[in-house]
Image 1: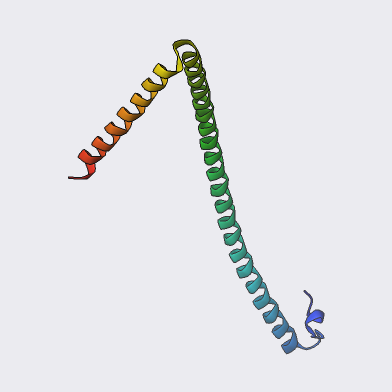
Image 2 (image 1 turned 60 degrees about the horizontal axis):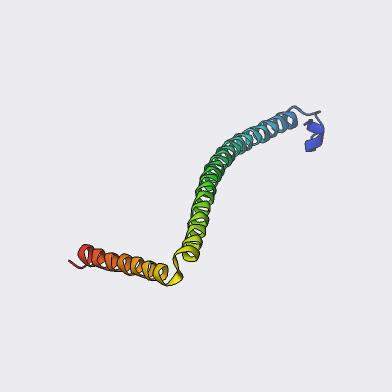
Length: 120
């Protein structure tokens, strides 16, 4: 900035020195503000990089979960198809009785194990 922009005419020695001192003070303020802005930008950059890394990690975890769910879906579908074939071939009453027995045994084991582990 020139002295003329600060209102000084530049003709007197005292006015020129005051304008130069004002220019120096403004320049130091600008440098301090620039340094602060630079440090804030670095912090922002580091935060955005950390967010990007976290998003990538979570996307990988979601892909793995989707793969696991897909294989579970296939397993469940094939099991249900086999049960359907078994119901059709062996008679539904005996197969239904077997399925009920398995469910009862499972819940009995569940409640007994729960009683043994948590009710001490």
